[in-house]
Image (cartoon, rainbow, N blue to C red; front, side):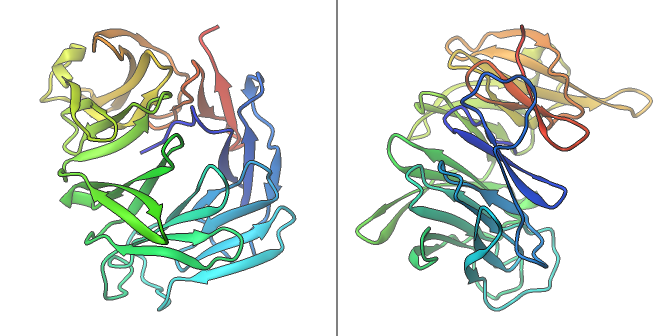
Length: 314
């Protein structure tokens, strides 16, 4: 699952072991050069990362900690996920930074890590690493996708539980506590928030359809099954990728196999207001997940160097 960055100023990538931040407010197209390159602490295997708008620090998760470092790589604080787990079950802790840069949200797949408790979702003071609020999620997830709703200060978290489905949560901080809401589904995978933050996009966990929902209540605006794109639902599925190319246009990815078992994928534009499927388009992506719509009409793919490539139709 890949989030859009239509409301973000920066996007981060891990390139050659360094956390690289790219400024999306410029009009630069083609391969992007990082505005910041930050080395993690020695020995850390980074799995999730985020940066504040001033680029003075970077935040990242390993399998056993949430870490804050300065832009030149000096460690500021470390919040360990105790007890330490050397279990490797495909679990990946993740993090996201609040728009004001004051709070780091961290998802901990503690159940899969073998820590003997449900998964944890915490909000930590970005300056000190102190826990502001934390909640048990009653999930057994492999990983979690954060999306920030900047207007309200709320955060969406999608916890992927493998074959058991996907659970979407919404949270905010109030008076030192976490106000947590769990959406009433375990079969929708969160993909993206719209640029105006009034909608969000999900894909059926079984990959049979894509849907748009009103924010925050989750009421379905419309649903498009595979056959709406002119494909056989017995042979084609909707990938857990895509997002809002602009306020008016959604990117939906379909995939399948040919008769000789060769995999294929295609990207389609969908009109956000009417649900009408527009023409297929070439995103110049290397695979079904190598497309990150930015909400402003442009999107990112990945260069062989590992750095993002910003593209538009023109």
